[in-house]
Length: 545
Image 1: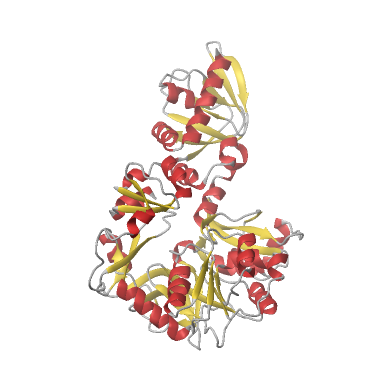
Image 2: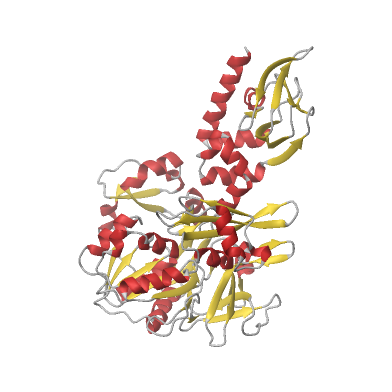
């Protein structure tokens, strides 16, 4: 958030008063000259109540903005890199709304229930703006939970228009409260962000009488494909290109691929972005000759319906064979015990990468990882069967209802750390993203020395397999034996002193090494980690005298 404020050059931040404490703790309020606080009339320093902006201090522009003028700048999630500011013009938004309404018939009688942040493409460009454009009403949720959504659904006026991610739909369909709601006024339910499992598609239509309308899009393009809202649907397909939008499926040379062939999805039309704010190189890479290179993979069928295969960066290459995570997820979703599934690629010494599956089970239904692997083995090629299946209670999210695949991948890579080192069990996603690229896995045979007494403290180590002994002096005196889950070496780094002991492997040992600069940087950036290291250092110092 601090990066986005500074990068955008924003001169004022409008923020709800409940968010002020967390922003102060994160130290981002200083990135803008002025702060307007909603819901609090107090003023201090650069902060003013939002109501002060509603006066007549300055006249409104006498003319409407030009279609080419920037209207909004929406920052991408920035899961694996810095967020990018997607610039959308007034023309892109207004034309996009008109084109959308040519396919999605809304009236002043419609009431849309908004389950995600209003800045998300699924909400802003598919619900908020189209509904208000036609004179309808929108009902906003502060945050999606099953309880809050059901409560809002039951309040008057009756809701006619829903839009949800498949993950959110799955949570709702598992709720008895949701199943007891009145859906007699519901006309339309959109789903985007991921593939809707066939079982979920069918169960929702049985419950509500309304089929789910799947669509696909991005911040850069808006919705670029949609199943006919009130026409023929093909479950699993994201439908036909949106009205006024050009969608091409091409090979690596940019040539159209034959029907049924998977290729890269490119999108062109009046509703696409102008580019990324202050990121000319990234803009040139993504926006070429009026086409947005989405990074999505898809195929057209003989009827012109588009089938989303996955993100190119998510494709798993196992011993030269390409595995599309969505195909494996769809096979897992056919098991009656599986409510939700996510498949990611994990580095492997023999195969390059192997698929790992994370699943959430239906409430009150059990299934072992081996049973799930056996189930999909009858439906998929051998190389597509997950090497590991992990049953978890909740999927990590990088946005409302959007699974954080990269975080799952990082957790799989460092599973031993997370399972055995206490601090990592409750570490947040930002900390894992910061530390994982800095870690270096190493193995030692029995008798090998990891750390020599008197050496410079240039690394610390997390022990994930085996046992080591701590020795001091000559002849060597054993001070302690450390087992899996221990870490050592931070005392020399934090106190800037030579190693106080020798560490030697007693068995085959695996450790993750973290260099001195990484220790200091992470301790500074993540206060919890710094305190954890300091406490351990004090304990070691007291133990060794």
